[in-house]
Length: 545
Ligand code: GLN
Image (cartoon, rainbow, N blue to C red; front, side):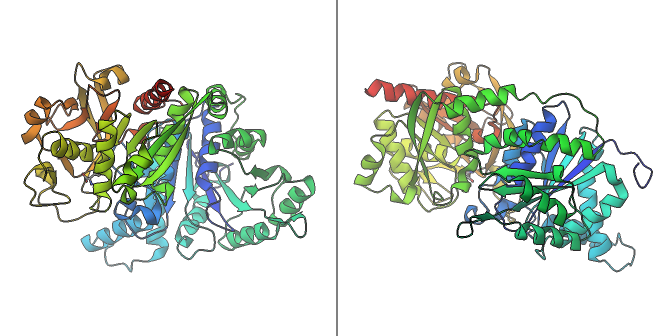
């Protein structure tokens, strides 16, 4: 019986973490969500991030990995990418809330005088705003279950207000309407030959000190958890032994939902929230994907040229889209991470000549630009399958202008304001923008594909919608010059005629897109551009034999 007597339709699950960061809360949250979804429930996942940036849009990818963009144009944490790839349901701004946004909202209200002279405090004002943001997703009426992942580790000063909000919610929502899943680490001490539970015990104590008793404890471990270890964790952490879930290290994140199914994480969660659901989870399609991914019949080597390659998370969605596109083709995609700054003189040929495909990645600013242009020149001239994404597409345009049209000084005004040929230029509505945060061209826009385009063949339709994150554009002033010189415009925005896709029809596969196809690739809906790019790379590889 809910403690406050009110029955809530939507139930809430909170995922917290302790012992160390990087244990994979996002993947555990996504896996639980997937299993619940596969039982016919509608589920969404939200991430609360403890930092003070209003969103991660202004963060350097070295700091926080890729910035994931939603249909509604929110710049969000990369975990939202996992949520979408697992659930195959779009997320939105409401799915990612930072401490910065919470404070921003509260302080804006304070400036307006909305608090009527009251002292504005962390409790209740900040915690109220946190609760409002959590409950908002449930209020939409679209979800049976909202899973909220709380960033950081228990014990961090930064995440205290989030935990306090969760503690308060237990009383407001009622016991059976919410659940806390705590993820910890059970390390294996080689010298002692033992799994150790103490870090988990301490982590749970820390959570209890915030007034939260975890309902389920998920233990990351390199070795299976024997019964006595499970019992020990249950005893010391105040839960039933069925609530101790083993999360063994997996070869791929896509295996985790099945591991969690074996451990009955979903059943336990449903039981503890009094949700009666006798449907067995239907993970057939997921298993089919996993089988193809784990048993490839071929391999292709695709170069990914970017300036953040030291940190793979900076290109998370691209790497995952290759996994999805590879599985469809029963092909393992081996990504060769190539630093754009290393693309100088003879290195270009040496690094690219044996590749089966090349992707030039999105990015911002001057660094590594000439390397990207040199790479495009090489793949264009040698007819190697090419996919350019956002900045990658812009570099392909500049390369074409310089080396085919003969406009030596052609450039983007992002890198060279006074270039003689601004073939990539700032959009009119971007000219006077001063604030950097949230002001790019963001989110989903329509694109009409040209009748004869390769893109239309690939998508199998002529109207698509894709996500964007950029300020600069193909400069339509030069469009006819490009077209006369053999560059084909594969797609444009139907409202404002902005160029979305460029192609070189005489090459076997040469496509540049102003948008980010990688953001919409999921396990159940691999993105057609990635599927066909992998296929083209495979065909090219086979043709070389
Ligand atoms: N820097 C380029 C622009 O803003 C490309 C952005 C990107 O690759 N996401 O237009």
